Image (cartoon, rainbow, N blue to C red; front, side, top):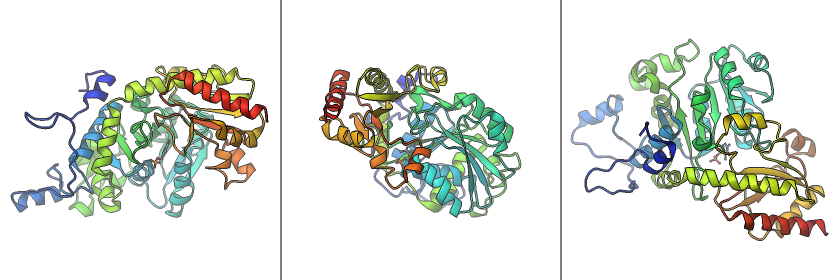
Length: 427
Ligand SMILES: *Cc1c(COP(=O)(O)O)cnc(C)c1O
């Protein structure tokens, strides 16, 4: 399948039924697998055989989703997790322990920010946040001897800034640590981070992978590109006493990272994706290429419409010429800027809250990547616990409205916004 175009990979995936078997990926709703003798099971426990043993660690339906995500991103392997947050946790804890350090861009998803700034800190892992506009030297300057990863998102949150892959991958190479990228909002249809120097890619499959807002999940994909045997990652090189001395780099080569994430961390933490969720994500991926194209097209059209609206004070979308990372968007997102845009309405926070009441079709939800257009006013909802000062620091302006542009006819989307903005303008 590696030779096929990405659209074909979305549709065909990696699942190949034998004669007489179901054409559609079956949901294997079984915790357990049967064997003829104990020696087979012993080999499984010693990691000498790769079949399934127990669904906390692997399951046939979940495996197909993992294989398909690895195929679409161009990685050597993937491990699914129960949520995007679980995937990020797995990705970091696979290579970090107490005393270690991470350098991360400050413009990241709020949940990931909390994971890094609060929860990993409690586990003894320190994080330095840097501006995505920092120079290569400044990024390297933020590192320490204990630094184990450089992390950023393809499309930042909520500024929708596009990651400067060249600068970040160069810094990661200098630091001799893996470059980890959250590619949730771009998806492999719009951007393939491994081709741009990333070593590990993380997804919340809850968003565009699912696309229909049915399930929570995540996945970590290993590019197989990083040399873990550089003195910084003994846990991947030295014998693992919990597996009779398995040595991940020696025994699993390019798949060392993803193998350790599965057999050690999924085994111990148990943040496993359910087979039913994996089935739905796998189904979602079959139309991902079509959906991302239309999400991007509708979002650019809505952005241009809002730009010219008298009730709108500003619009932010990666592919608007005046966006501050427009040049990076042109370079790294040639197929589209994804479906998220933000805008400010004249009249500030109060007008923002008011606008939502006047929308007829567009729904207020705490989500993005759904095929239905949805809206959120962060200042009065997701970020309401923050002081106004903290909101500003996080880039959450009082009048900022975030739209996840869906797949409805663009004329109906713009009409809904036009009517609601005009209603607010007259009060
Ligand atoms: C939603 C999201 C996450 C977290 O994913 P969950 O599935 O909600 O746990 C991580 N990163 C990004 C960019 C997201 O949008």
